[in-house]
Amino acid sequence: MKMDRVEGDLDRIDRKILDALMRDGRMTITDLANHVGLTKTPCQVRLKRLQDSGVITGFRAVVDPRRLGMEHVAFAEVKLSDTREEALGAFNAAVRRIPEVEECHMIASHFDYLLKVRTADIRRYRIVLGEKISSLPHVSSTSTYVAMETVRDAY
Image 1 (spheres, rainbow, N blue to C red):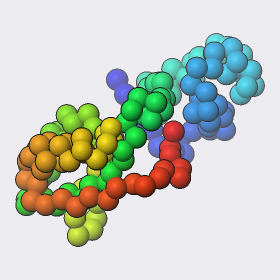
Image 2: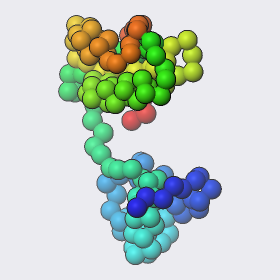
Image 3: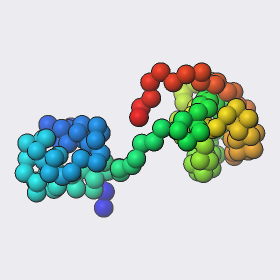
């Protein structure tokens, strides 16, 4: 059972564990324990608590999308025709099923959602926009902004 944690529940050692794992998620428990100044067992207990509480949501490999031929990044503004909860839920569920959508954010603006979409090229983006994004529930209009260069990425 996951328990909600708030930022104030994290002490200095928890934050050191998180900082170390965000830099190197493959760090061994022994190295992590040494890094934060604990022995192995208390470090494992803290790590498990951080995972069980949902502070740590998972571990993954970070890959370079360009090496996979996925260099094209576009941002799509999406305006919905209906913004009642049921419509938002339908849109949210459907957009999660589009693998090209890397991020989807509900926005407080003149549009409703901002999507980060990654594809191989502009031709593929046009297909994703026309056949997938524009067909999502309650979409009334979209606008696209193509990224010319990524200056800083979260990964």
